[in-house]
Length: 309
Image (tube, rainbow, N blue to C red; front, top):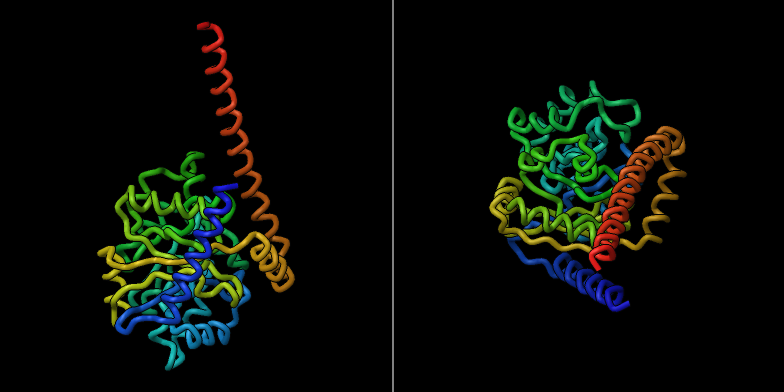
């Protein structure tokens, strides 16, 4: 109970902190939501809603749709928003783990998508591509991209750690990422704590993103630092001189958002359910085996103590 109260207090503190950082923002700083989705993948956010959020909160937004760049490119062509949109995409490897790519310009983003993603994805952008995580990560230097590891400990939403534990992805891949998403508004407190620890252990810069799929969650997690343009903002993060802040959405809020997504993307609902069901089933099998192993280990430990006596 005490832990639950502490978490609630921590969440309230974070909400106040992020609200103050956005509303009472300092001059010469860039505040950015580094992870969001639109109607062009599995999100509910329209381009007008993204624009309104940028205007209302005064933040930059990385539109990182799943295996798709249409929304990001369309926003970049608008005169007043070109400098507010961060070029990026969230690619799903065939092992069903997610990888965030950030680029220095929209030309590089478009070239990367056309040559490395479009030919390897299915009609529904939410489904995994046919490219392995290793292949995707090795493309970083070719396009001068920045690799970010999103929600690494998420069990059912493309987190890479469970894939590593199950032997689907080699653990050495972690060193190849430039940044790690340490706060994701869609993840639990514990998952974000583990993400922060992973970033600290690997000595990687930390970022934050709402992983927003609807307008009410846009801007709920931010990375911010003293910068005047995209390049200087990237440098601030890479040198670990930035700060991050965010809130964790309640399970009720996530459920409501999921229901809205299901009704909006009804045409792709079948493939999405099949995809997530298969992923969830494999994850549950893994965690079931892990739990069984832990129980057996504890039983043996108890038996040893009994026989020693």
